[in-house]
Structure formats: C-alpha cells, structure tokens
Length: 614
Image (tube, rainbow, N blue to C red; front, side, top):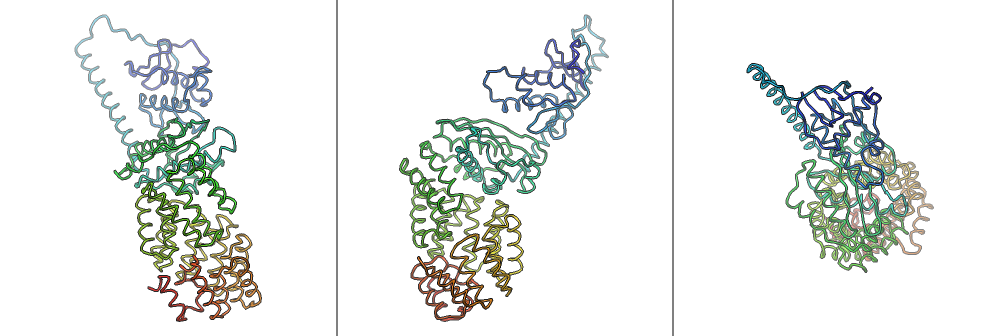
C-alpha cells in the first residue's frame, strides 16, 4: 500500500497523478491549481486508500497542536475544494466517500510509481501530432466542463427541492447542565428566524426537541418529521460571547451542503441568528420575499442580562407546570426591568398568562386581561411579532370579540405561516363558531409543522368530537396516546368521544384517567357529567360539590348538572359563568356536555350575549 512504501514519487488514480515530492497534482499530465490544505488532504487519503481516515486523525495531521482553527469549517471547505478539482460528487462519489460525522475514505484504485518527466521536448513534434494533441485536449476539456455542469445541475436541482427543514437541538458545548436553557433557547431562536422565510416549512421546536440527546439516524428523523434537510450544530456561551457552529445536511443523501461558524457578543445574538437563517435560505435557494427580508433584518441589539433572563423564562414556560409558570413570569419581568423596550419579553409574558388560563392557574378574567396588556405592549414595540398577534387573538376570542380575534389570527399567520400556536388557537376559534372544516384544515397545517405535538393532535380529536364525528375523534385520540399513553388531554378527548357514542362506562374509565393525570377542573367536570350519564348520580353530585369548593368552577358545575338533567341549576351556574366571563363559554354552541339544556330559551339568549348564536 502507498502508505507503507515511501520509495514512490507519484500516486496515480484514474487520469490524475499526485507528485509527492513537488506537491503537484496533474491531470493527463497538465498541472492543476490546488491550495495547500486540500492537497495535503488528498495525499493523506491516497496514502491510506481503501481505509477510513477519521476526522480526528485529519485534525492531528493537518493542523499543528496549539493552533486555533475552526476545524469543522476548514475541513469541510478543504473537502469541497478537493471534490471540485477532481469533478467528484459526494452523493455518488468516484474517489472520496464520506462517512457522516466520522471521516473519509478514498475508494478508487491507487497506483504508486515514479513520476513521469514533464519537461518540454527538445524539438517540436510534427504538425500532425500537434493537431492530435489539440483535439484530444479540446475533447477532454469539453468532457470536464460537461461533468462540472452536470454535477452543478444536480446539486442545484437537489437544493431547490429542499422545501422543509428542521433545526435539531443544538449541542451545549459547555457540558454544564445549567447552560442547557441557553442551548435550547438558541435552537428556538434559530427555528423562529428560519420560520420567517414563508416558502419554507420549518418544523416546530417542540417536535425537534424530541431528538435532544438521542442517537437516532438522520434518515429516521427525516422520515418521522417529513423533512428534506436538517440543521445541526453546537453552541458555546462564555461570559458575554456566543459561538455557534451549524451545518446543513440533505437528509435524502446524508450530504453536508454547508457549514459555518459564527461568533458574536451576546447582545448581537439575534442579528447573528438572522444572518444564519439568511445564509441557509440562500444556500438552499429558498424564495425570500421582501417581507421575509424585512422580518429577518429587524433585530436590534439587546442587553445581555435581559436576553439571558428571557431565555430562562421561555425555558420554564415550556415546562407547562404551575411552578414553571410562576418562574417564567418572574424572569420575563426581570428582563423588562433591565430593558423596558424588550418586545419579546412582553410577548413571553402574554404567552405565559394565556397558557396559565388554560391550565386554570389563574381566573379566566385575570389571564385574559393580563394577556391583552402584555400583547398590546409587545406589538407597540414591534408590530411584526406573530406570537404576540396570536396571543392577542386568543385573548380577544376568550373576551368574545370575534371580529377582533379573526383579524389578529390572520395577521399572525401572514407574518409567520410556520407558527404552530397561531394555527392551533385559530382552529380553536373556528371550532367555537362551528367552522369545523376550516378548523380541521388549520390543525392539519399545524401537524405538518409540528408532527409530534401532543396538544395539536388532541385538539384535532376534540374538533372531531364537536363536529359529532365521534369515530374520527376516537381514532385521533388513540393516535395521540400512541405518542404518549400518559397524556391527560388524549384520555379526555377519548372520553368525550365515548360519551358521544353513548359508551358511558368506557367514557368514565378514560375521564377518570384524565382527571388523575391532569387534575384540572375541566377534566373533573367532564367526569362528573359521565358519572351522571352512566346513572351514578351520587358520584356526579359529589363532583359538583368538589367544583364548588375554593374558587367555584361555574361552567364545569353547569356541565355536571346538565348531565344530571337539572336544567334549572345548570342554567343558574351558566348565568354565574357569564358574570365571571368564564373562558368555557366560548364553547356554548357545540359543547356536547350541554346538549340537555340547549333548547332552553335562557340558553339561546346566553349564546346571543356571548356572540355565538349565529
């Protein structure tokens, strides 16, 4: 093998010859221009032809110890330059085979022999020989140009076909678990920036986070998320500096399309994320509209301490627990004390208050009012924040301002077509008005962006139930439970679907599980109604009494009494719910748990006052 025999002067493969003494690469005797690093890389691969040379081995041979270099970026550039010179293709290589995230192997036959003498002849050759050489050289040049154009055509066609992408969780290079929130935040921000490119389908953070610290082949991830490409990389946060290394991989070929390292001060990190998103969009030749460019460019410098508090706030908000909500509110408020004009922190507050209402952590009227104030302040500072428009839309929906909610949801989705939460909340709005086909379409769009989202999947099941498509609701609930058997909302929607099918005992079983896993008044009230439907009156009354303790859940109590057939008490508690502006009232028109009182004149009047009569 060449690696073990140092008596050779040249290594030959195909029409190429590497002169190891003069460090010259020739093709058909003609010297090719190649930079020092790609040339050294080629010599190492030729000397080890047929065996894998790892990336770590190349690091040691190409870069001296103690010299700082962005190794991944430099090596990737050297490989790309070498392939261009050899007219090689990473997708179907003739010479250099890539073993993703491991190394490279030279796969063509290599012959070691003395280098030929390329000095010019002492006398000119005959004219016939000159003409032959000319035509041969011309033919070879045409073939080479054709190969380059063919390869570039294939590359451009592949890049243009990338229409969906996922940002996998960035690795925390500090190895400090207390810095995980920062790496997660950087993943979230890069996802958000890429989602501003309207022509791309960008997978939501929540689905991508399923792959954090899990060794799963990229091909499997691509199948599960239904994407053409992924972005993966590392982040290092040290004092007031941030360094992010990212690479773009075509999941269909496992081909590395692009890699780069960025380093900025922490206060400039949002501008850096926008730059990364623009580079990726340019690399895959995505269509970027003037509106997309404006959104990608609109990031002002931020105070590092405020940004750090904001990232921690998002981290605790995503935990979806009572203590997590409290910490999130405190951290967003801390960020705003440092920077009172920090629009994203106001948007974070709006999201937190809105979600707290859904988890019944605070009274509905409190959460709606606080959400509106925070979202309005965020939009005063930055009217392009799609998340703030979505939060405002949901608050207006719960405040029975139906035209205002429609306007905000439409604006949110126009600003960010990849915003899963906006699609989901808009679907909730459409469901309440009985526009079931539109609601289902919105949730299908949300699933295409966030295919592993439990809440989107279970919301789709609930819409099927409200549309009285009970078999579809059962099927969708079971799909959600396949993703997570302990997700309480899925047991809840399955129980509601069973109630619609008059399968009362099955409904009780599922709703008991939802109540035990979730412990919310919403699940408790549904269980009380199921007890009544199953003929267990004493248990149903017991649930009603439980819901009256502490802060009474008026809407849920009405659902239980409706199940018991007590129309008078059901209407009294619905009137109380109206006085409290209970968020459950938006479901009046199609809530199956209230069917027993739907024909009551007082119920029809209540629907008119809430705005859902027509």
